[in-house]
Length: 118
Image (cartoon, rainbow, N blue to C red; front, side):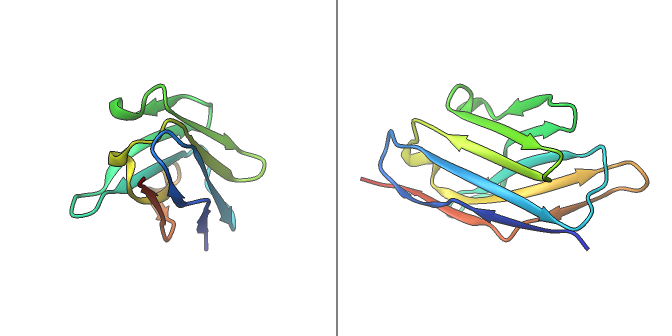
């Protein structure tokens, strides 16, 4: 069974940077989409960025130019480089892997908190 483990969250000042990492244990189905979601306090979970196996990336409008998603298919990892962080980026960030070949399914990580505060 696949499990995702995130790391890299923490407290950062506005304008600072953080790098989130997510590692999958077990065998992932390919092709798939690796993504980062976040859930701000008191709000619903929202998609931040995603990347398909082939490298096509999509970003939430509010993070374009500040966040970069990348993945290593050989290592089954996905990272989110977050620069120029803003107060409104404060949230619990979740890693997700979704596949639709040979059946549809997805798996979630446990979440890592990111707090942007001065």
